[in-house]
Image 1: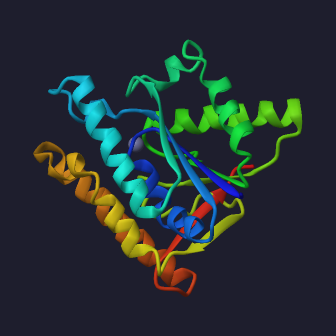
Image 2: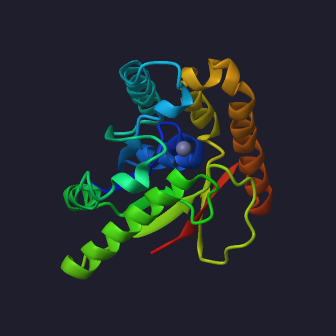
Length: 222
Ligand SMILES: [Zn+2]
């Protein structure tokens, strides 16, 4: 079975960034796995970590069901400190095990110029693990990056993968709505709305550019 693997820092990044493509590939019969580095506990600093953990796991699994994904797994690193834990928590070999086990055709992860340090850290770790595995065992996959924050990006001129998500756009929005802890949180309402608005704006603008209703655009990293 052909498979796709998504690596991201927090439990809604995968849908915000790649939800349409994930739904599309799942529909085509691909096995779509998501690996999330932290539980995103910083979004709710006033709650106990275990409480947030349970909520974020549940929401991710619901969203995964909506897009037809295979499984969601968490590495359980500390939100906001990902980079410092890569070595102590053996993260490179965990990523390599995932890749060896699933042999994905495509790997999706965060973009090179994402504003959030945790997002950039995830991309660095994924590329390092990929490059090591490529060197050690000749492992090959296509690695693409998605944007969570950037509404529009013109700086990069790497090859792109354009995914027409006109048919999957509604599914992507439905999956985003599973992350109720992010939507309902008063203090983060404004912050989250910007992200959600970005999903519409990006989907629409890329749609215009690539002559379809909605599109997601990915930049090739490897
Ligand atoms: Zn994130």
